[in-house]
Length: 372
Image 1 (spheres, one colour):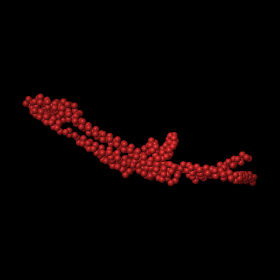
Image 2: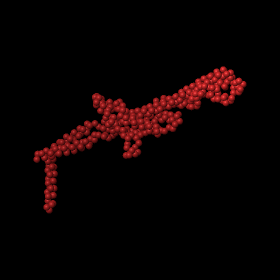
Image 3: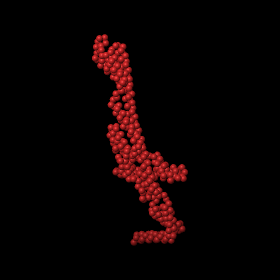
Image 4: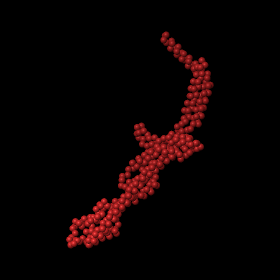
């Protein structure tokens, strides 16, 4: 009984303190209500005047053959002309990689927002410093380009792009225009790379053609010089035909060697001498000179292949300049947000009311404590 009594007394004291506390607060209920109303009004003012935030979201993935439009046909024709395999998967991946690269470029984002209607509206009448802050926020805060975490979302294959603004229409329109701008920039980058490569291939073919013409013209000139020189020697020696000089027949081996030397190659320096050509005789040498002079150069098959390749590739340059394609495909197009991110008016009003009750009660209790 002696142990139970102090505990009972303590409990009664706690009940008395709680009742006393309630009485104190009840006496000052007008002040509590007044504070609660004031804080609720302040919360309402903030909730109804704070800038709203609406977020539009989209998800993009690699383009398909239909998205590539006329550019697909150009690349397929290019591969066919060169006789190489056309890999549509490698092409779409390469183009989408450019889209992702451009979308993450701060310079490209700046280019877009500087000419956007939203930036012009927000920066109207502002000084340069404020304009810079607005532009920086649009680039790095309002806009988001996210690659889903493959560990958390193994089936995610694209990019998620979002943008928030003060109205749902501004958010959706700006996001749509941004994706279109990035798409055009990425495709222009792809075209520039392809045109550079195509120009290089055509340039190499033209050089190969020029090299054929140069080398064979040099070969023809050297051959004619050798034949003219041999003809002069044959005339001086009085050799008219495949006849013996001084009554002896010309050795067949020497004749074969002379015929071989008449066929000149640029890389063989011995041909510039033409030591045995004169033994073929004036008539044969003159006939060779006449034929080589009158007839055009006979080029190897590769020369004509090069010409045809150039003729087929050059029109692709014109077609490429007019090509249309989309560097991505929508998994989900920019949506029209129906629920704003903030401010959450109901939550703000409830928090304002609770804050008024708590702070006013605390203030009243502290004052009462000091009075005692």
